[in-house]
Every structure is written in structure tokens, then in C-alpha cells.
Image (cartoon, rainbow, N blue to C red):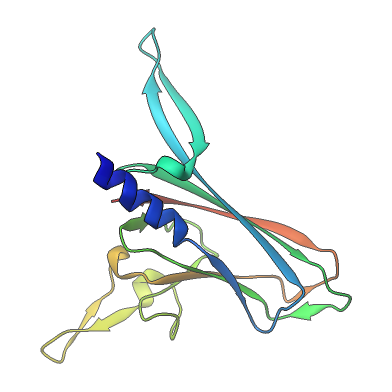
Length: 156
């Protein structure tokens, strides 16, 4: 059990977000929560949300990334990029989320990504291969504009 807790803490520490496309005036705040389902005294399932300090294997994570443009000029072409720690399995249902299986060199939906095989062929990428995820923000982000991105992942 302690091993799962330590792995979970390492996982949470690795879930950092960053900007691309030269956005010095952008602020990101990221929080990670654990969603657990427990049975109450009457046998009914109850969902609880808690701080992810104690995430363990099998836990469902909810990641919230708030962004805000704090500059004085409109920004263009911004993306929010997150590294995906090993040991997590992402919920890929968000159509705006793009994935990379090569450290961010190429992006697309998972069904569009391929990886080389040791014998010189290629294979379709799987969810376990994802190294980074990203979202493109609106074409132009005005000063003071803000938004929120959320996604789910499971600790393996």
C-alpha cells in the first residue's frame, strides 16, 4: 500500500502544465483531485472528491487547469501542454484534446498516431504510449480572458 501511495505522489508531482507559443503573460493554476466511489451505510454508492495527495493505483483523477491572460496585448496561437506521467491512463473523450507519443514532436488524435517497431515497421499508438497532451486555445486571447480545462486519468 505504501508503494502505491509513493507512486501516486510522484505521479501528481509530474503533472505540470506549460504554455507554448511565447506566452509570458499567461498564468496557469493546476489542481488534481481523486474521485472515489464508496458505499454508504445503506449500500448506496457515494462519490467523494479529495485532494490528490494520496492517489494510489486504481484511483480516478480529475485534473483542473485554469488559465488567464494577464498581459496587455492580445495573444495568438496559444496551446496548453501537459506531460503525462508514466503510470496514468487518460480519458481521451475530449475532442479538443490532442495527444503526442513522441515527446511533443507530433500531435493528433490517438487513432492518427503511429510508432516505429523494433523490426522496422510501424504500429498504431495505444493510450499507454501517450507522453504529452495539449489543447489549442481560441485563435486570439484578449487581455484578462480566462478559461478552464479539465480531464480525467486513472492511476495504473
